[in-house]
Length: 134
Image: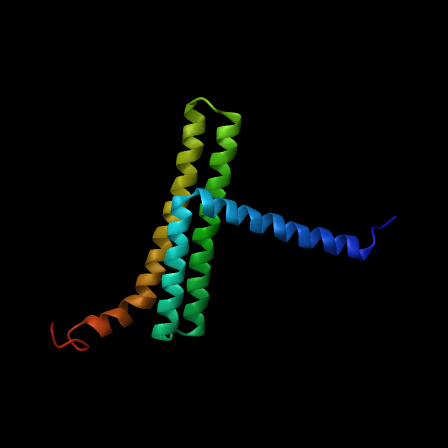
């Protein structure tokens, strides 16, 4: 017999709660994720200040989301690795290094997006045309 719809809705709402608890736990425990949080706030503020387009917002959102996702997955992989291999093992170290590498690749790609979107605008504000001090 099928479960009542309100039970399904409650489970879906609960799953969002679990996910938000996971993000909050990662923010409390991971210095790099806090750095990404600060960078996200700066990028959003800069986007509003510089008036980036909808397409640029979409690219920024994808870049930010990719970095956050990579960092959260890295955190989960590290926790699972520590659980199953509390003592050093080369494969455990490799798993952690590869997961950290994924974060690095995502962050570098996001930096590239940021430089392409924000670079010319910031340069115009600070460069010779926008600042007589140059």
